Length: 306
Ligand code: 3PG
Image 1 (cartoon, helix red, strand yellow):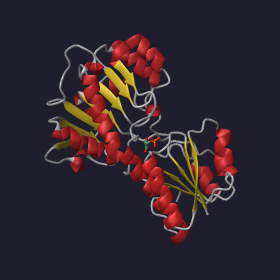
Image 2 (cartoon, rainbow, N blue to C red):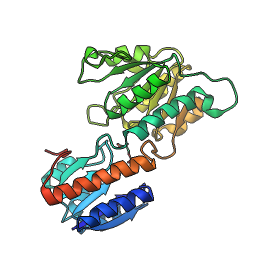
Image 3 (tube, rainbow, N blue to C red):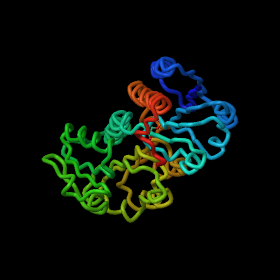
């Protein structure tokens, strides 16, 4: 059995070594395609793979169809908007993710980006502190929960919203749960987005919500650029000169945003939320173990296309 790790943005070496160890101990063979730049390279590499580990790499219908022996694909990470689940199901390929395994890295980056924006992107001048400010967490999954915990430790007030829960169900001694995104946005000096990219959430964060934010608020997006309505973001940043936006990976209109709004906007050059050695090890090892467990024992825990 051949397990292919195809990563346009490679894992840390220790993660790759560990993945190899897990795969080879199970009597399987590991193949690596790292730093590839062309889709054709991926199409060629998957041709004889029985299992595939990817990160944000796009596993399209074309890829699934090119992988004639493919039985399982694991997205080493949480968001699976890069997998064509329908194509996987049609071709009887099991698709999985590794939820929570890289969450801490993303949560730490979200807090780091808040501090970076509060301190004027480390440029000279007087900044502000996070202590005493209100953090709004939009979507309270693995990452949202970690961000909330870290923010509490920093002395922030934390307010959370999740579409599947009532506010009262999320309420704790240190966390205020709210019933609607509107309630959340109204109180959030910092708004941290953890909404996955799904058909219903693409472009869902726009002017109607962003205009509710308090004066001087800062939006931190470490989820997906696609959930933001970029045109409306541009409009609200023009209308509300007090707002700031920081994003892990540039929106499509980043050049325009920078030109118009300068240091009120910031974007990482390449998605880096999960880019830590620890997250690579956690997510990479989990992916390899899930593949071995599926191929050897038929274990379908974490299957997405049921
Ligand atoms: C995820 O959904 O797990 C994160 O966005 C990480 O993506 P990456 O593996 O491409 O860094």
